[in-house]
Amino acid sequence: MDASGSQQLLDDWDDISDSEFLNIPCEEQSIDPQRPLSTETDCEHSVDFNSPRVSTSSVYNHNKEALWQEAVKTDDARGLKRKSLHDNSLSPMQRFLKRHLSVTLLCDQSWCEMKTVYSLLKPYLKRKDLQRTEVQIGADMHLSRELEIQNVVPIDIRSREDAEAIKLLNMSHMISRLEAGERVREFPVFGVQEGVFFMGVIDELMYNQKGELVLNELKTRKHNSMPSSAQDKVNCLQVGLYKLLFDGLVRGEVKKDHILNHLKLRSTQVLGAGVQAHAKSIGVQVTTFEELVDALLITVSCSDLPCIDLLQLEYYHQGSSGPIGTRVAPFNEAQLRAELQGYLAYWTGQREPKGVDIEEAWKCRSCLYEQTCDWKKNRSQVSDQQAAHASSCS
Ligand code: SF4
View 1 (cartoon, protein in one colour):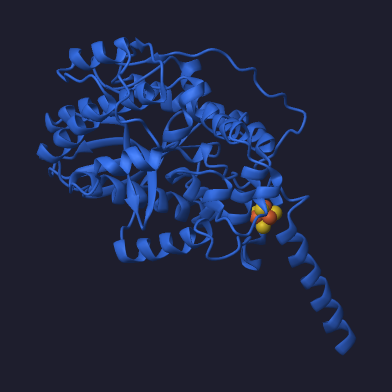
View 2 (tube, helix red, strand yellow):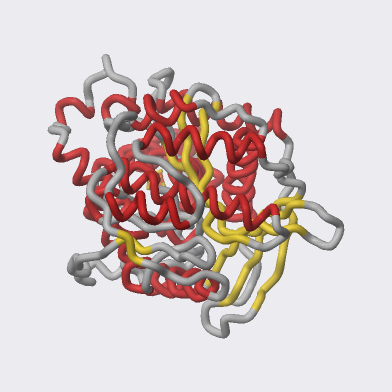
């Protein structure tokens, strides 16, 4: 089964499998600074007993947005102080109190690293951005697609371990469905890559007529056209990272300690009655979180799931809901790992964050942080000085 989390518990598995949520602006994005933030509402966990997945539309949308909000709240609750954000003795992972990184965040970073840093420093702007109409439409389209093959059943959760347990149970159930040749949607993936624990959520997995395991990533677009090469690059990175994580799982590279230690989850935590009952209903007899992790890892290692053969990006038009086009994403593991190492060098404190290169300065025009971005200001000053120097020499 697959599940959603209550607001308090969503920060750890935050990944959003759609570009609308990547804080990557459309080429012509506009932001209404007056647009109010939505009010928070209660939500409950829900699980589909027929096939993995969660929630009502409002829960789904809210959860997607709540991921960021909760990450921020959690940081606040942990006493994150501005002083510590500039403490060079700490790596950004430590400064931002991150136990893991999400695929979404890495993709965000690949668009502009400075922007990712600002989104962590100024979360209220990020929250506002997530209220954009096109983000909401994208979420609705994802939800309807998901509900085409999955129903929702609510489950009461009482702890972080309960919330993670639901996701592991969903995953376990999806593995069985995949093995039976069915398609699954919103498949969680996780694992250690280049020394950092990552999490993500794959939109769709299915076998094609050739028997290949295909990853489909749904992207919805405001405009009825394929994305720019810059956006395409980010999307290819996203599905490439999903493949690394999924393949690591089926190869048995994910260990119990990775999950418990990186996410700081309590191995002996007894799962809530609702979670235990749900586990039992799908044939998993467990009492503690550790027992569930063991059960999941056995399920994965005993499954006959192959590595992903094909990465596909499917683009849909938001206005008509019709398809725009499909693109097969290339996968070069060595190149992808080198790229990943470059991004992680920032998170592990080996270098300072970077903004966009001059050739990509157009990205700044639709950036939430354009007015305050130091990188942009410095780049403008350098350009002005170069122009002044050139005119004095002529
Ligand atoms: S203004 Fe430009 S460099 Fe600065 S965060 Fe935005 S996109 Fe990046």
